[in-house]
Length: 300
Image (cartoon, rainbow, N blue to C red):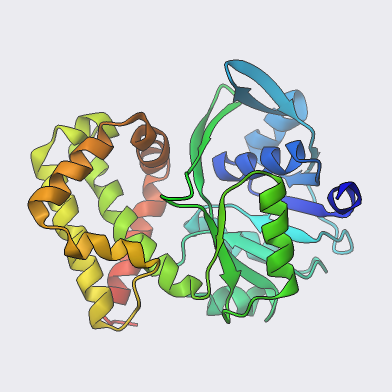
């Protein structure tokens, strides 16, 4: 196992909150982790390293930081952890690198055809993180999502379970990151967006945090109605709701759903995983909303 860890080279492209979380988890598990950074985040990492809060103490992850990627610098896995509006540029930046596997931890309303055209067919594994948090004064504060809610989810675009999928699963297991292998990541992504877009919009409609949104009856009600409407639309255009547990949003009566979501938005968990991302990535969420509308309106 030690040889497996040391010999496995991982590159993180985009060391924001999500990229930093996976970098430190992989590093702490003993894997060889490199971070490709630019701008102010590069300066921050070069000066202080990857700092994170750990049980009230500030710790530093053992990672290598680079500002340029050589075409012949090979990695077992390249994780692209940028926002939706940044993914095309990020893929263009790394497409000449000869590493065989690129994992896109990014929302994708429209599928993966365009992304594959950029980097080449067969290189992508679609994924989505099961974590959230914030970077404050250069220090990462984070939380992993429990398996029952949303583990790190990934799979081959064609749904086949390959050797590299199982190797990725082994990396996540070794790093103590809850995970799930999905055979239809396109359906999973659309099902996920049907949930998180209304959740983010509720924050925007309220204009505050998850806690203040929990007290906003109109914002909570609109969120619940929009969720139900989006899931009905996915069923109408024959996209399977994945995972199956998300059908609960369709089956749950609106009065009960409002009670559940009000309680959820009152939790610290919602503040970490919903409010922080919604308020820090508003441009991304609004763009995802526009692209998702094209899907459910059958305009693509």
